Image (cartoon, rainbow, N blue to C red; front, side, top):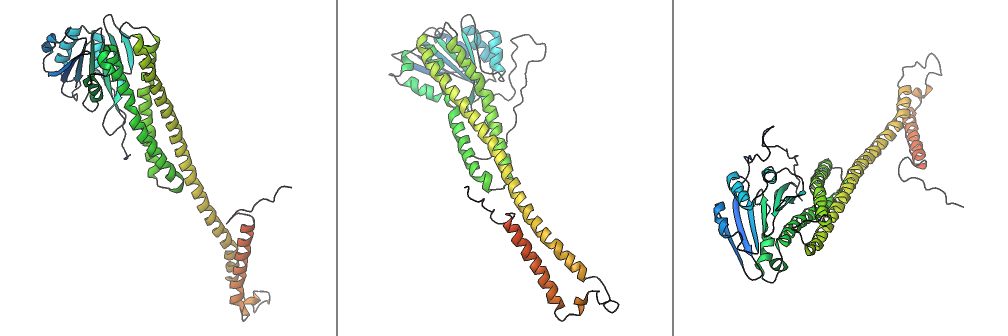
Length: 370
Protein backbone atom coordinates (compact mmCIF):
# COMPACT_ATOMS: atom_id res chain seq x y z
CA UNK A 1 0.00 0.00 0.00
CA UNK A 2 1.34 3.39 -0.94
CA UNK A 3 2.06 5.97 1.67
CA UNK A 4 -0.89 8.24 2.27
CA UNK A 5 -1.45 11.67 3.70
CA UNK A 6 -4.50 11.54 5.93
CA UNK A 7 -6.65 14.45 6.94
CA UNK A 8 -9.67 14.52 9.16
CA UNK A 9 -12.77 15.28 7.19
CA UNK A 10 -14.39 18.45 8.38
CA UNK A 11 -18.08 18.19 9.16
CA UNK A 12 -20.02 21.24 8.01
CA UNK A 13 -23.73 21.62 8.23
CA UNK A 14 -24.87 23.57 5.20
CA UNK A 15 -28.17 24.70 6.73
CA UNK A 16 -27.65 27.87 8.78
CA UNK A 17 -28.32 27.85 12.53
CA UNK A 18 -32.01 28.31 13.28
CA UNK A 19 -33.15 27.11 9.84
CA UNK A 20 -36.44 25.18 9.76
CA UNK A 21 -36.12 21.37 9.92
CA UNK A 22 -35.94 19.87 6.48
CA UNK A 23 -34.04 22.77 4.91
CA UNK A 24 -32.06 21.44 1.95
CA UNK A 25 -28.83 23.12 0.86
CA UNK A 26 -26.60 21.15 -1.49
CA UNK A 27 -22.88 20.83 -0.97
CA UNK A 28 -21.07 23.10 -3.48
CA UNK A 29 -18.66 20.21 -4.16
CA UNK A 30 -21.40 17.64 -4.73
CA UNK A 31 -21.32 15.76 -8.01
CA UNK A 32 -24.02 16.12 -10.67
CA UNK A 33 -27.12 14.03 -10.09
CA UNK A 34 -27.74 10.96 -12.20
CA UNK A 35 -30.91 8.90 -11.76
CA UNK A 36 -31.12 5.27 -12.80
CA UNK A 37 -34.34 3.35 -12.38
CA UNK A 38 -34.80 -0.43 -12.45
CA UNK A 39 -38.13 -2.22 -12.37
CA UNK A 40 -38.11 -5.97 -12.01
CA UNK A 41 -40.03 -9.06 -11.10
CA UNK A 42 -39.49 -12.82 -11.35
CA UNK A 43 -40.16 -12.84 -15.10
CA UNK A 44 -38.74 -9.62 -16.48
CA UNK A 45 -36.59 -6.59 -15.73
CA UNK A 46 -36.25 -3.16 -17.31
CA UNK A 47 -33.89 -0.27 -16.59
CA UNK A 48 -33.42 3.29 -17.83
CA UNK A 49 -31.80 6.62 -17.01
CA UNK A 50 -34.09 9.57 -16.36
CA UNK A 51 -33.53 13.29 -16.15
CA UNK A 52 -36.91 14.43 -14.72
CA UNK A 53 -38.83 13.10 -11.77
CA UNK A 54 -42.06 13.12 -13.81
CA UNK A 55 -40.66 10.25 -15.86
CA UNK A 56 -41.10 8.02 -12.81
CA UNK A 57 -44.90 8.22 -13.06
CA UNK A 58 -44.94 5.37 -15.57
CA UNK A 59 -42.76 3.20 -13.31
CA UNK A 60 -44.45 3.64 -9.91
CA UNK A 61 -46.89 0.82 -9.22
CA UNK A 62 -46.13 -0.96 -12.49
CA UNK A 63 -43.50 -3.35 -11.10
CA UNK A 64 -43.32 -5.73 -8.11
CA UNK A 65 -40.10 -3.96 -7.08
CA UNK A 66 -38.97 -0.51 -8.22
CA UNK A 67 -35.40 0.60 -7.55
CA UNK A 68 -34.43 4.25 -8.04
CA UNK A 69 -30.73 4.97 -7.64
CA UNK A 70 -29.57 8.59 -7.39
CA UNK A 71 -25.84 9.19 -7.80
CA UNK A 72 -24.67 12.70 -6.93
CA UNK A 73 -26.58 15.11 -4.71
CA UNK A 74 -26.10 18.45 -6.45
CA UNK A 75 -29.60 18.71 -7.97
CA UNK A 76 -31.72 19.44 -4.89
CA UNK A 77 -34.84 20.20 -6.97
CA UNK A 78 -34.70 16.80 -8.65
CA UNK A 79 -34.20 15.05 -5.31
CA UNK A 80 -37.13 16.94 -3.78
CA UNK A 81 -39.35 16.02 -6.73
CA UNK A 82 -38.49 12.34 -6.31
CA UNK A 83 -39.18 12.63 -2.58
CA UNK A 84 -42.64 14.06 -3.23
CA UNK A 85 -43.50 11.17 -5.55
CA UNK A 86 -42.65 8.63 -2.86
CA UNK A 87 -43.85 10.80 0.06
CA UNK A 88 -40.52 10.78 1.87
CA UNK A 89 -40.23 12.57 5.17
CA UNK A 90 -38.57 16.00 5.13
CA UNK A 91 -36.22 15.20 8.02
CA UNK A 92 -35.00 12.06 6.28
CA UNK A 93 -34.45 14.02 3.09
CA UNK A 94 -32.38 16.56 4.99
CA UNK A 95 -30.16 13.70 6.21
CA UNK A 96 -29.75 12.60 2.60
CA UNK A 97 -28.33 15.99 1.57
CA UNK A 98 -26.20 16.50 4.72
CA UNK A 99 -23.75 13.66 4.15
CA UNK A 100 -22.08 13.58 7.57
CA UNK A 101 -24.64 11.28 9.21
CA UNK A 102 -23.67 8.19 11.16
CA UNK A 103 -25.20 4.84 10.25
CA UNK A 104 -28.73 4.53 11.63
CA UNK A 105 -32.25 3.25 10.96
CA UNK A 106 -35.46 5.25 11.37
CA UNK A 107 -39.00 3.96 10.95
CA UNK A 108 -41.47 6.37 9.35
CA UNK A 109 -45.13 5.75 8.64
CA UNK A 110 -44.91 4.39 5.12
CA UNK A 111 -41.21 3.75 4.63
CA UNK A 112 -38.01 2.76 6.41
CA UNK A 113 -35.01 5.08 6.30
CA UNK A 114 -31.48 3.65 6.48
CA UNK A 115 -28.12 5.42 6.55
CA UNK A 116 -24.85 3.57 6.00
CA UNK A 117 -21.31 4.48 5.00
CA UNK A 118 -19.43 2.83 2.15
CA UNK A 119 -15.77 2.73 1.17
CA UNK A 120 -15.08 4.73 -1.99
CA UNK A 121 -12.32 4.29 -4.53
CA UNK A 122 -10.30 7.31 -3.38
CA UNK A 123 -6.80 7.32 -1.93
CA UNK A 124 -7.93 7.75 1.66
CA UNK A 125 -9.81 5.37 3.89
CA UNK A 126 -12.63 7.90 3.85
CA UNK A 127 -16.23 6.84 3.49
CA UNK A 128 -19.17 8.27 1.65
CA UNK A 129 -22.75 8.27 2.82
CA UNK A 130 -25.30 5.91 1.28
CA UNK A 131 -28.97 6.32 2.22
CA UNK A 132 -31.82 3.93 1.52
CA UNK A 133 -35.58 4.29 1.62
CA UNK A 134 -37.42 0.98 1.84
CA UNK A 135 -41.14 0.92 1.10
CA UNK A 136 -43.79 -1.64 0.29
CA UNK A 137 -42.73 -2.00 -3.36
CA UNK A 138 -39.78 0.34 -3.82
CA UNK A 139 -36.19 0.98 -2.78
CA UNK A 140 -34.53 4.38 -3.18
CA UNK A 141 -30.77 4.75 -2.84
CA UNK A 142 -28.84 8.02 -2.68
CA UNK A 143 -25.04 8.23 -2.65
CA UNK A 144 -22.55 11.03 -3.10
CA UNK A 145 -20.26 10.11 -5.99
CA UNK A 146 -19.54 7.44 -8.54
CA UNK A 147 -16.55 6.24 -6.51
CA UNK A 148 -18.86 3.73 -4.90
CA UNK A 149 -21.30 1.91 -7.14
CA UNK A 150 -23.85 -0.86 -7.12
CA UNK A 151 -22.78 -2.69 -10.25
CA UNK A 152 -22.56 -6.00 -8.43
CA UNK A 153 -26.17 -5.71 -7.32
CA UNK A 154 -27.23 -4.84 -10.87
CA UNK A 155 -25.37 -7.90 -12.17
CA UNK A 156 -27.29 -10.09 -9.75
CA UNK A 157 -30.55 -8.51 -10.87
CA UNK A 158 -29.73 -9.27 -14.50
CA UNK A 159 -29.67 -13.02 -13.78
CA UNK A 160 -33.20 -14.36 -14.05
CA UNK A 161 -32.54 -17.25 -11.65
CA UNK A 162 -31.08 -15.14 -8.86
CA UNK A 163 -32.77 -15.03 -5.45
CA UNK A 164 -33.01 -11.27 -5.53
CA UNK A 165 -35.27 -11.36 -8.63
CA UNK A 166 -37.83 -13.56 -6.86
CA UNK A 167 -37.70 -11.68 -3.54
CA UNK A 168 -39.20 -8.39 -2.45
CA UNK A 169 -37.70 -4.94 -1.95
CA UNK A 170 -36.40 -5.88 1.50
CA UNK A 171 -34.01 -8.36 -0.12
CA UNK A 172 -32.75 -5.63 -2.46
CA UNK A 173 -32.11 -3.38 0.56
CA UNK A 174 -30.20 -6.24 2.20
CA UNK A 175 -28.13 -6.70 -0.99
CA UNK A 176 -27.12 -3.03 -0.90
CA UNK A 177 -26.17 -3.24 2.80
CA UNK A 178 -24.22 -6.44 2.20
CA UNK A 179 -22.32 -4.79 -0.65
CA UNK A 180 -21.45 -1.88 1.63
CA UNK A 181 -20.14 -4.14 4.41
CA UNK A 182 -18.18 -6.41 2.06
CA UNK A 183 -16.51 -3.36 0.54
CA UNK A 184 -14.48 -2.89 3.74
CA UNK A 185 -12.69 -6.23 3.51
CA UNK A 186 -10.31 -5.43 0.58
CA UNK A 187 -9.12 -2.28 2.33
CA UNK A 188 -8.55 -4.15 5.58
CA UNK A 189 -6.62 -6.84 3.71
CA UNK A 190 -4.38 -4.15 2.20
CA UNK A 191 -3.86 -2.62 5.64
CA UNK A 192 -2.98 -6.06 7.00
CA UNK A 193 -0.34 -6.52 4.30
CA UNK A 194 1.10 -3.09 5.12
CA UNK A 195 1.30 -3.99 8.81
CA UNK A 196 3.06 -7.28 8.01
CA UNK A 197 5.57 -5.43 5.84
CA UNK A 198 6.21 -2.93 8.63
CA UNK A 199 6.74 -5.73 11.15
CA UNK A 200 9.79 -6.87 9.17
CA UNK A 201 11.35 -3.40 9.27
CA UNK A 202 10.27 -2.17 12.71
CA UNK A 203 13.18 -3.91 14.48
CA UNK A 204 15.86 -4.17 11.80
CA UNK A 205 15.42 -0.71 10.29
CA UNK A 206 15.76 2.64 12.03
CA UNK A 207 14.13 4.58 9.18
CA UNK A 208 12.30 7.53 10.78
CA UNK A 209 9.57 7.21 8.12
CA UNK A 210 8.36 4.02 9.80
CA UNK A 211 6.79 6.07 12.59
CA UNK A 212 4.87 8.17 10.04
CA UNK A 213 3.68 5.08 8.16
CA UNK A 214 2.46 3.41 11.34
CA UNK A 215 0.71 6.60 12.36
CA UNK A 216 -1.02 6.77 8.96
CA UNK A 217 -2.26 3.18 9.33
CA UNK A 218 -3.56 3.89 12.84
CA UNK A 219 -5.36 6.94 11.49
CA UNK A 220 -6.99 4.92 8.72
CA UNK A 221 -8.07 2.27 11.21
CA UNK A 222 -9.61 4.99 13.37
CA UNK A 223 -11.63 6.26 10.40
CA UNK A 224 -12.79 2.74 9.62
CA UNK A 225 -13.80 2.14 13.22
CA UNK A 226 -15.88 5.31 13.25
CA UNK A 227 -17.71 4.08 10.15
CA UNK A 228 -18.17 0.39 11.05
CA UNK A 229 -19.19 0.70 14.71
CA UNK A 230 -22.51 2.54 14.04
CA UNK A 231 -23.25 0.17 11.17
CA UNK A 232 -23.06 -2.76 13.54
CA UNK A 233 -25.59 -1.05 15.79
CA UNK A 234 -27.84 -0.32 12.81
CA UNK A 235 -27.78 -3.93 11.60
CA UNK A 236 -28.44 -5.15 15.11
CA UNK A 237 -31.51 -2.90 15.27
CA UNK A 238 -32.80 -4.31 11.96
CA UNK A 239 -32.47 -7.83 13.37
CA UNK A 240 -33.77 -7.11 16.86
CA UNK A 241 -36.72 -4.82 16.15
CA UNK A 242 -39.78 -5.70 14.10
CA UNK A 243 -40.20 -3.51 11.04
CA UNK A 244 -43.15 -3.77 8.72
CA UNK A 245 -41.14 -3.76 5.51
CA UNK A 246 -38.55 -6.37 6.51
CA UNK A 247 -39.71 -9.97 6.33
CA UNK A 248 -38.48 -12.86 8.41
CA UNK A 249 -36.53 -14.53 5.54
CA UNK A 250 -34.46 -11.37 5.07
CA UNK A 251 -33.62 -11.26 8.80
CA UNK A 252 -31.62 -14.45 8.30
CA UNK A 253 -29.51 -12.72 5.64
CA UNK A 254 -29.19 -9.63 7.82
CA UNK A 255 -27.78 -11.79 10.62
CA UNK A 256 -25.06 -12.93 8.22
CA UNK A 257 -24.39 -9.30 7.31
CA UNK A 258 -24.21 -8.46 11.00
CA UNK A 259 -21.66 -11.25 11.52
CA UNK A 260 -19.51 -9.75 8.77
CA UNK A 261 -19.72 -6.38 10.48
CA UNK A 262 -18.64 -7.93 13.79
CA UNK A 263 -15.75 -9.59 11.98
CA UNK A 264 -14.75 -6.21 10.58
CA UNK A 265 -14.76 -4.67 14.05
CA UNK A 266 -12.65 -7.53 15.45
CA UNK A 267 -10.14 -7.17 12.61
CA UNK A 268 -9.96 -3.40 13.01
CA UNK A 269 -9.37 -3.67 16.76
CA UNK A 270 -6.72 -6.36 16.21
CA UNK A 271 -4.90 -4.25 13.64
CA UNK A 272 -5.05 -1.22 15.92
CA UNK A 273 -3.42 -3.22 18.72
CA UNK A 274 -0.77 -4.56 16.34
CA UNK A 275 -0.07 -1.07 14.96
CA UNK A 276 0.28 0.32 18.50
CA UNK A 277 2.62 -2.56 19.33
CA UNK A 278 4.65 -1.84 16.19
CA UNK A 279 5.07 1.76 17.22
CA UNK A 280 6.26 0.75 20.69
CA UNK A 281 8.49 -2.00 19.25
CA UNK A 282 10.12 0.35 16.77
CA UNK A 283 10.75 3.02 19.40
CA UNK A 284 12.15 0.41 21.80
CA UNK A 285 14.40 -0.95 19.04
CA UNK A 286 15.70 2.52 18.23
CA UNK A 287 16.26 3.14 21.94
CA UNK A 288 18.16 -0.15 22.29
CA UNK A 289 20.39 0.68 19.33
CA UNK A 290 21.03 4.10 20.84
CA UNK A 291 21.92 2.45 24.15
CA UNK A 292 24.35 0.12 22.38
CA UNK A 293 25.98 3.09 20.69
CA UNK A 294 26.20 5.00 23.96
CA UNK A 295 27.68 1.93 25.66
CA UNK A 296 30.44 1.67 23.07
CA UNK A 297 31.19 5.38 23.34
CA UNK A 298 31.21 5.13 27.13
CA UNK A 299 33.65 2.20 27.04
CA UNK A 300 35.94 4.13 24.72
CA UNK A 301 35.77 7.21 26.93
CA UNK A 302 36.40 5.09 30.04
CA UNK A 303 39.50 3.52 28.48
CA UNK A 304 40.93 6.90 27.56
CA UNK A 305 40.46 8.35 31.05
CA UNK A 306 43.46 6.50 32.63
CA UNK A 307 45.45 6.98 29.43
CA UNK A 308 44.84 10.71 29.69
CA UNK A 309 46.01 10.58 33.31
CA UNK A 310 49.25 8.85 32.27
CA UNK A 311 49.95 11.29 29.45
CA UNK A 312 49.10 14.17 31.77
CA UNK A 313 51.58 13.00 34.36
CA UNK A 314 54.38 12.51 31.84
CA UNK A 315 53.59 15.82 30.28
CA UNK A 316 54.34 17.81 33.46
CA UNK A 317 57.54 19.91 33.47
CA UNK A 318 59.57 18.52 36.41
CA UNK A 319 63.33 19.12 36.76
CA UNK A 320 65.22 15.90 37.49
CA UNK A 321 68.29 17.98 38.40
CA UNK A 322 66.61 19.21 41.55
CA UNK A 323 65.40 15.83 42.76
CA UNK A 324 65.89 12.28 41.46
CA UNK A 325 62.22 11.66 42.18
CA UNK A 326 61.08 14.24 39.62
CA UNK A 327 60.19 11.75 36.88
CA UNK A 328 63.46 9.87 36.48
CA UNK A 329 61.78 8.00 33.54
CA UNK A 330 62.44 11.08 31.40
CA UNK A 331 66.11 10.13 31.26
CA UNK A 332 65.56 6.42 30.61
CA UNK A 333 66.74 5.12 27.27
CA UNK A 334 63.35 3.35 26.75
CA UNK A 335 61.22 5.89 28.60
CA UNK A 336 58.94 6.67 25.64
CA UNK A 337 58.29 2.99 24.74
CA UNK A 338 57.71 2.36 28.46
CA UNK A 339 54.98 5.04 28.57
CA UNK A 340 53.33 3.71 25.41
CA UNK A 341 53.50 0.13 26.71
CA UNK A 342 52.03 1.19 30.04
CA UNK A 343 49.09 2.85 28.32
CA UNK A 344 48.59 -0.20 26.05
CA UNK A 345 48.67 -2.54 29.03
CA UNK A 346 46.11 -0.44 30.90
CA UNK A 347 43.81 -0.44 27.86
CA UNK A 348 44.14 -4.22 27.37
CA UNK A 349 43.47 -4.93 31.04
CA UNK A 350 40.38 -2.70 31.02
CA UNK A 351 39.01 -4.34 27.84
CA UNK A 352 39.58 -7.78 29.37
CA UNK A 353 37.80 -6.71 32.54
CA UNK A 354 34.84 -5.20 30.63
CA UNK A 355 34.45 -8.36 28.56
CA UNK A 356 34.69 -10.57 31.64
CA UNK A 357 31.89 -8.56 33.28
CA UNK A 358 29.75 -8.84 30.12
CA UNK A 359 29.71 -5.12 29.44
CA UNK A 360 31.06 -5.61 25.90
CA UNK A 361 30.91 -8.54 23.52
CA UNK A 362 28.80 -11.52 24.48
CA UNK A 363 27.36 -11.48 28.00
CA UNK A 364 28.63 -14.13 30.36
CA UNK A 365 26.43 -17.17 30.67
CA UNK A 366 25.19 -17.88 34.15
CA UNK A 367 26.55 -21.08 35.71
CA UNK A 368 24.30 -24.13 35.25
CA UNK A 369 21.88 -24.79 38.08
CA UNK A 370 22.71 -27.65 40.42
